[in-house]
Length: 286
Image (tube, rainbow, N blue to C red; front, side, top):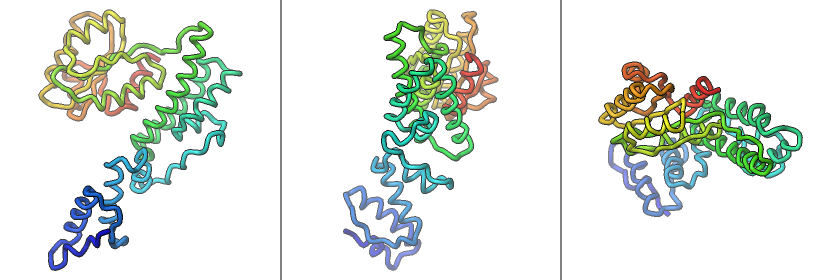
């Protein structure tokens, strides 16, 4: 237990001192803080601490508090919804799985994907683009749809039916860059839109991208870079793809990239985020 504001008496900018002290105390194990709940900086510090330490499951409390949008309804208990659209939109994994099993009694795998799962992801993506939902919610929806896809894959394997993939996509972080969080998010979204994603990893040489694209006959390549120092490697990769003569489209993304740079190096698309990557994939591959 700690009276946080006691430390700042007699000092200017007490709020800054208090919230910084609160952060330090929380990190050292404080679990009962005496603070003024009418000072947003203090309660916001607690909210951010819970988020960063993983106490705020799926970032839901933080999103609900700061999104300036109605709070997303809490996940319903299993069996409370029979709507696959709603289950995916709310990120309900077990319900998505069970509802998909029931849907297979009356629909084919492709009907479930095209009529249910993809529209649900599209709706979530639209709300994400409008700022009504945020990345944790987008990923939960993708994970819920993945549960449904896994059910479909098992059934396909049992019946010997054809695959449900909509096409192959290569994703890679270019040579010299070891950052792959953004690439991994893109991969998660693309997989749940029904594409087969070949993840070449990070620090990938241009030759590896080209060889894989030609060997696997991949029509869409996604390249990622976070550091300005690795942009030449991205340009080299695009140039080598063009030189190979392999017919494909290239999308690039990353914090340091812009639409102008994409045009400059001859890429076909600039993907500002994972949802944009899915939109590009639908345009190129269907």
